[in-house]
Length: 256
Image (cartoon, rainbow, N blue to C red):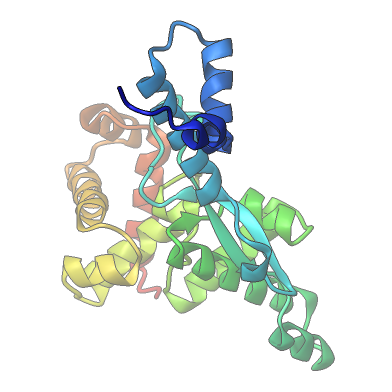
């Protein structure tokens, strides 16, 4: 007969005094029909993994930085999708830098300094697989979303470069800037679609979709169809047709 292991008997239960076991126990109490011990432990692990992904140790966030929840680049919007049903990623952003202070000392205008910060925040979030909306930027920079939107749109139009934010990458909102830049790079600058995709932070499929829609709207225009008829033929909104018609008119007028 085996000799009892009193050490294991007395101290073995200490191995179960963990946050993982506590979460699994709470799951069992609140959702008794969810499954057995193995399922509950798997659920507890998933919860803890999610928490770990969304919490940055204090040593990873330095003076002048802020932790923010951004929309995942990999989760484009779907019909009737809510933010609470969207994948989020934590991003660490440089809210205030020495360069920002130098710009203030150099007496740069408030709009210039705001634009510089907004561009930096968008780039940093995108590099961490996240996208910021105009509302995110407005809240972080304590200003209005319309001001942010106007400044970035003017910058994109002047430079011909897209800023990687949710409005452009996920095509959320009514701005036509990214459609115009994509079409301009392809049809005016003559760049191949894959290069356009790289330069505008879009997938090749998305670029092909924009270019194809522009071609279809332009074909309907050449056939003398009205915007309403074009929208009916292409099964899209009249507003979208007007966006592409405005782009085509601009190109034909020779504007950059």
